[in-house]
Length: 224
Ligand code: SF4
Image (cartoon, rainbow, N blue to C red; front, side):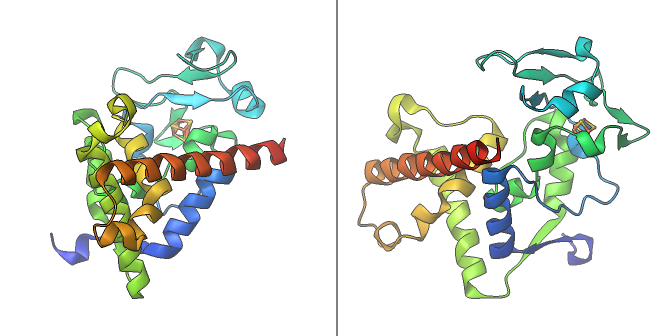
């Protein structure tokens, strides 16, 4: 692809730090969306948590239904027959200031970072955007960090058998985010030098993800 068609995704390590912090604090990242609204038109179910009262107050209850497998009060908002979120008006989010945390923390650069395809034909517009992003590497650390995120995504997708019951995320968003949460495992000399077995690497991924989730829950608890 011609380089002039790319859009800068920012310095990789700085972005990685920002997106990891956003996943913990749910503060969101600064994404240069421009006129792109692919994530609002790509058949995503939007999860809204019970405490998101301002968001819930802006949405007609008939558009919401209970989120399967989550505690009471968690709901999902669907999309129309063309995959568009019902809150999209004239190509813009009509509840932008009160949009859901799911929307705030969504950053399609996670797919570019992890080297993961965003999904099937209903995610074509997102794929177009993720193909345009290009990260910058001002230092060797930026390249090493990106390599580690991609290595994490590749390991998880190709070694499902090393995880209990083969349980790895099959949803591309969850998979890319998992790679971002556990990338540090692949910066470890024991992995890069081949000292650890695949089972040991999988165990380390599970532990690193659990530690990340603990930080997230702690942060949520402090914000309540
Ligand atoms: S609520 Fe707004 S930001 Fe979220 S998907 Fe719908 S239109 Fe997009």
